[in-house]
Length: 167
Image (cartoon, rainbow, N blue to C red; front, side, top):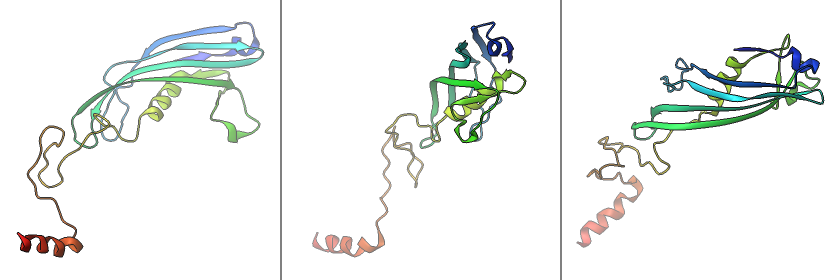
């Protein structure tokens, strides 16, 4: 969705509402497509005192896999975005708070796609204290306890032999 901002930059319009759904099913996260439903985008573009401001809320559901135990994960994300829209910047090092538009046109689809990608965490977990899988037998340690013998540091093996002799 491309939004013409000419009226906002000229000051003839002070407000434009945004309320639409966007399809991001082809977004790739890790090795899969985690977004199965439309992304809901709601917000406003306002112009006050020659400053054009974008305020958005982006809501979406993430469907993926836990990075520790590989269980299915469904998480809801709600991302709030607040940026100032400008036609150019004098100091290009401060561009995190600004959206630079060309020809007074904002490509909202591209912007939302970027914000969704940046809002996803590096690691997805089914729960904060996920125990993961046993590295020896592959048992999901959140569900069952495995009977694998724990690896012993080779430097401590001599001490274990002393304990076995005492018994």
